[in-house]
Length: 501
Image 1 (tube, one colour):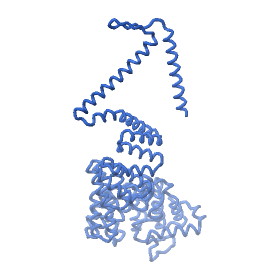
Image 2 (image 1 turned 90 degrees about the horizontal axis):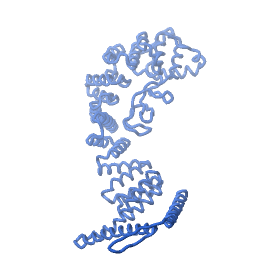
Image 3 (image 1 turned 180 degrees about the vertical axis):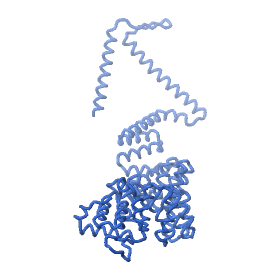
Image 4 (image 1 turned 60 degrees about the vertical axis):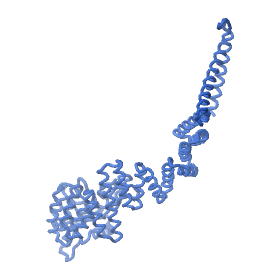
């Protein structure tokens, strides 16, 4: 409405300006004298201006006639399309103008106008490979999914636009949540244009979600081949896929193939913790204990982790606590000041019933960086040293409300997982899990508040005044059960209890 009003005002202003100019020319004195070949013509100022305009129009017509004459001569000389090109030139100009206006409308968010301009461009140009794409994008912007799909299907009929049509329908299926159809379309699209990076990423993600680990590894190799992925990132992700493939083989009951895939995954990425654990189990099954210990030490050197310690303990499952503490010394010396090393040493000393050494191993962790695991270990130390029930329950109460420590957290959506998985269960992102401390509001324990994974010996309850024949703590979950019972029986005592240093 406003634009129409502006155009009317501009038109009126131009007419008024022309009328004022004509009146001014009429009032001017003098004129223009033209003498040629004995002929003399005198023109008033107004007639001179009109004559100049007529000459310009005549010149334009003369150029057009000359162009038509050239086209006619070409036609007579055997160029059968010369005349048709001459008459189509104006249509082509109008068509490209409409196409450019449609693209501008699309960029500015005017979807309906873009569709109208695309239709006009198609009328003049007859180039569906250009106008159909503009129409499809405008229809999607306008929310007309049916129209967009219809246009994408028309694009499938032309070899030049088939990839665009397949990709457009694939994105629609992804938006609808039809990942099965989207996967098939992504495979078709990548076959048409293997170097298309976005389609490679979509296909890799869909294959990982569908647990097609073999296909995903082929796609990953394709990305490396065409330079779309750094070599170090490829090795890491290929290791993740190899590990996932090994787990899939294990689910099918093919233990030998699973073992080989796990060892291959560890070879590709020694710092991938789940791969190291899985490969170590494979070496233990083959009786290669030294190989298992070596790769676990290498992984521990990259990043200490409780699962690595548990796998290292499983190499010799029937050893005594003292033998286990001695065997763990090479592992403990790799990162002696690391938090995980100190917690592991405390657990091993608790298993060996050396509670003062366990307290020394914890050091200032209880004050500087307490979490539920460290506080639970401290509760076990207090009980082992004969501390009162109030003191022990005080530590356990703190453990219940303390941060849970590092867990498997998705770097993309920050979702917490109980165990490592190749694809995030929340956002479906591939290879985004990392071992880190989550935000306290999101933290949940992955192993239980009282998880002491390497305790295999007895923890004496010296406060009872007698030595029990059976271990007080045989499995870590027992402590957790005692916490619940004791806190429910005497909540007031827990609130008043203060932990002793």
